[in-house]
Structure formats: C-alpha cells, structure tokens
Image 1 (cartoon, rainbow, N blue to C red):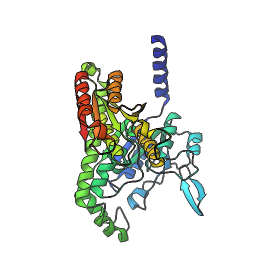
Image 2 (image 1 turned 180 degrees about the vertical axis):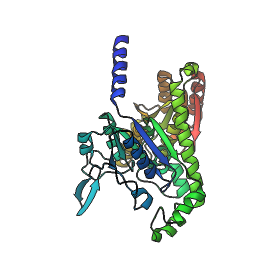
Image 3 (image 1 turned 90 degrees about the vertical axis):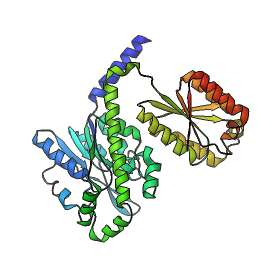
Image 4 (image 1 turned 60 degrees about the vertical axis):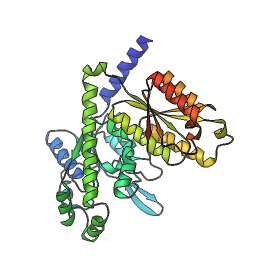
Length: 373
C-alpha cells in the first residue's frame, strides 16, 4: 500500500511539473486595467525571448488597451454561426496545435457558445494547462462562485457567469489590479471605460461609489487570502496545527442550501481546509416519492459543491441526526454547519430530544456546531 502511494505521489509530481504555469489578474470591477496589464506583460515576455501569443483578448474598444496589441502574435479566433449570427470564440484547438510557451486568455468567466469543446472558458484554460501551455488570464471579483450572495447583496443583481473558487486555488500567482474608487470613477467619466452614451447608466448602477468600495474590499481580501494559503501550504512547520474539516448538512430545498454551501466553502478556504456536504435521504424523499423539482435542486446543490472543491456525501436513512453523528465519527469532521432551522428539513432535527441528542453527541466527539443565517 505504501509503495503504491509513493508511486502515485511521484506521478502527481511528474504531472504537475509538465503542467503549464497559471497566473490570474483579478480586479474589483471592469475598467481597472487587467487586460492592459496582461498585454504589457506579454510585450515584456516577448522581449525576453519567450514565445507568447494572444489566444483571446477583449479590449471593449478602449484606446489605451488597443494601442498595446500591435507587435503581439495573435492566434485567430474561431468563427461560428449560432442562431443566425456570426460569433467569434477562442480557438482552443488552434492554440493547442501551435503550442506557445505562454498564451494570453481574457474573460475567464466567459460562457462558450453551444457546441464548443467546453462549456466555460475556465475549462478551456484548464485544458491548456494540462497540455503544458502556461496561461495568463483575468477575471473580476464578482465572477467568483463563493462570493455570489455577497455580490448580489452589494450590487442588487445576480452575476450569471461565474468560476469555481477552485480555479483560483490552482493558480500559481494571483495579482490584484487595484485602483481607488476616485481613480476609477475619473477613468469612467473620462470615457476610458465605456462609450459616452453608457457612462451615466454605469454611474447609476454598478459603478456607484459605495459598490466600488465594497467590491475593492472583497478583491483585496481574496488576494490576501490566496497569499496566506500559499504560505501555509509551503511552510512545513505547521504540521502540529489542528486541521479543521467542515460538514454542511443540506436539504432538497431550492435556495437555502446554496447559500449554506457557499458559506461553508468560504470557511474552508479561510482555514485552508476541506469541506463536504451531507444529504440524508429519508423515506419520504426516496426516488419514488421526491418531487421532480427537488431532484433538480439536489443535482444543482451537488454540482455547486464539486465546483467549489467539496465532497458530496449521500446517506439513505430515516434518522437524520443519527446519520450526521455517524458521518462525523467515521470521517472525523471538526465542524458541522446547518442552515437556519425551518419547518421543512430541520423540523425533526430541532425537535426536543433529537436536537439534544445531536448536541450531546457532537460534544462527545469534540465537534462544533455552527448555525449559519
């Protein structure tokens, strides 16, 4: 067994050494200069003799950014006719065939047109890395899956195009492109971000000063968190520290579990640890009895969990509390997280003796219980 693990460890190291390097420029909002910075870096690499090419760049008509394109090798985009319109997408196969040392790929959260090799551009990037091609890319903080609810609270809209937090975790380097709110608003009013007819609309919506300040704080915290995790992973002196392991208990409801999963994923990230999601399927939610809508909710919950780097645990049992205790005992979770009790999933859980049983047993195991709003 030890020999097998040793061989697998060596194979993992070998695979990692052949993988491309991955750098992400992250910003608080559109217009801070992520694409501009990537193109500047591309010129510097080219001057240093590195084979760097443009896989996909979106300038949004910004004069300063477009001025940096001349002189950089450009891989032509793939043209697709979709619903009667000609659409241009990044040509993944062409990049793999040309195989530059480094490729610039903008708009990491982009959703590819139907029929593409991958559904999302971040999946294209993962494929390029596996091919041994290094990637420099860019994304805004509002596109991070784990921050979806926070972004919705700040901006009042749900951002549809998102990337899993695990994408950032795989980056070798995450760089924050930072501007003060005043600098950004001055750029906007000067017409350096959007065309004149769109400026007032932007100022009235996403580019409100209070929004920018909160988004800036999120971006700064996120990059600081990634640096902290990198330090912890590379410093071996932390061996003696207790490692937290989080377990989120979910139901087949529509919205509450998604908020819970994201919050637990963020907690796990902050503690540089792993998390899992437990769904206890009671007889009343058996395959024959569970409503079709609830089945779809569960599938989405499980997909969100894996996207955020968590593990899905499914148990069939009439005893929800007993199942939670058993899973904690067998898998050595340090913390159990549940949502605010409701009359559906937690009606049994929070009823008198059962709730006391849960608390007593978690206490016996040294497991903490957190109720998240």
